[in-house]
Every structure is written in C-alpha cells, then in structure tokens.
Image 1: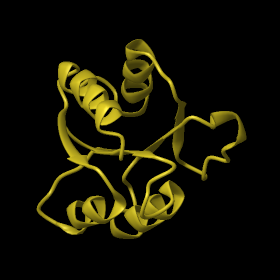
Image 2 (image 1 turned 90 degrees about the horizontal axis):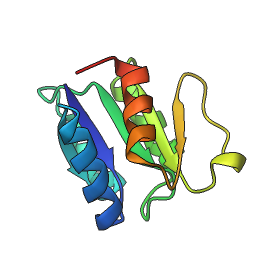
Image 3 (image 1 turned 90 degrees about the vertical axis):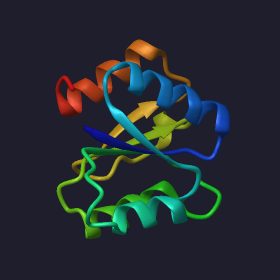
Image 4 (image 1 turned 180 degrees about the vertical axis):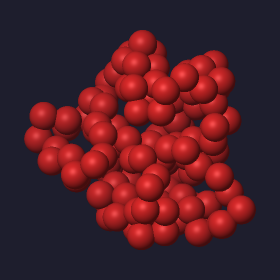
Length: 116
C-alpha cells in the first residue's frame, strides 16, 4: 500500500516515514501541498491514504484534503495537528494529535486501513 505523507518539518516527516515504512507501507513524501497535488494528480500513482499536516506553508491542510478528495473521492485522509483539541475534522476524515507516539501512529493508520 502506498501512503502519501505531507509534512513541511523535515524531522517530523522523516520520523513518520520511518514508522510507516516499518509497518510495511510504501511511503511517498511531500514537503508542501504543491508537491502533494502533483502526486495526487498522477493517475498512475496508487495511494491508500494521505496523511497531512494541518499547517502547511503554502496551503491549509483542509484545503489540500478538499482538493485531494476532488481528485480521489475515496482516498482516506489523516490530519496531524498540534492543535487537535481545536481542530474540526472534516466529515469522513481522521485526526491524530501532535506530538504522537509510534504506537499511536501505528494504531491510527491500521485502524483506517487495516494491516498492510
């Protein structure tokens, strides 16, 4: 399964990719929304999940998620936010609060997708 991780913080993105890779997922990285949209617009690129930061430098995570759903209506979206208590999760999408532990990330992704 291919997962798209959109995170502008290099260290956070690296840790997320490492954990997801250890879980058996193939991870595609994007450091900003524009790069993520290029990946989402590629019909040959299979994706099982998009995990995105809420606060990206070039676009809000919610806007990216809306555009992702226009391109791929069935794509699950998992938001990562340091302000999880005050974030309204769009219907049919998921949220994990930052900072999160490896086990929390594993449980959340497996809960959305099942085992890889």
